[in-house]
Length: 323
Image 1 (cartoon, rainbow, N blue to C red):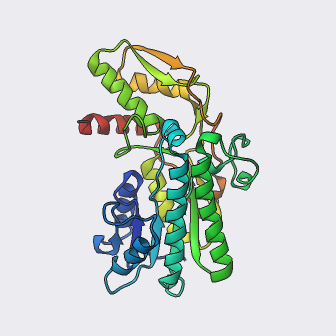
Image 2 (cartoon, rainbow, N blue to C red; image 1 turned 180 degrees about the horizontal axis):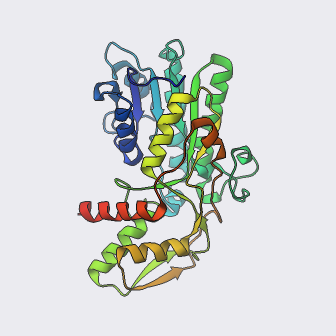
Image 3 (cartoon, one colour; image 1 turned 90 degrees about the vertical axis):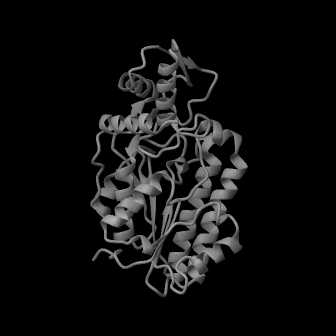
């Protein structure tokens, strides 16, 4: 039987962020009230610090204890940010998972029959993983270099959960979402991922009357993208039905070259200028597309929002909220 979340107390790290906002909506749809969702804000809790994580578990629900931890919080960015911050991204992501998982155990989550849900990253896959990426390939090589510190830290969290399942019987889930996009995404040009960065570039270039936009790389690399609402549903579904950290891909089941992606966003935003490719900049991992067969079988989950429809919703949201 699915784990009934309606009466559970849930710590949701990253709950005020891009993906987290949508997970909150899905939890509400399951009957979870706001009073049973605790979102630690970065200004209040440094999750890389063990003492701060201990304090989080003490104060989240006052005299009560958390039944579920869904760990979405991460420090991450696009190719440029990953290249500039490899040490910080490894440390921050490793430290957060390390402390949150261990302190959940010490807080008695196992005895309460609770569980820990960890979001991983497809940056953990080897650079030349056969396409589509299958979960069994996670250890068959080293990740793409610019993503490796972040990806390895996230993969280590999976191994920690696996070890805690074996030794302590901690119930958990480990989810690998593909590149996400949608409303509330990060549109900062330095730290954002490719879709929000391109949407902002096109709209601002259109507003200025620019004759061209500049894009990184050759445009030949391919990526897969998942609308954030679909990812949120997959994460909540995993919380309900998974008891062990079998890695599960969440994706839309298609890939698109960056060149075709740029051309599509140019069309949907209405930008009339040209596209210039800066080939001195890296492409990143050559191809990304996930096999989602396992998530379909184990979660009964499938992406629902078409790519073009998701892009239109994201562009509309950005136009309405851009300062």
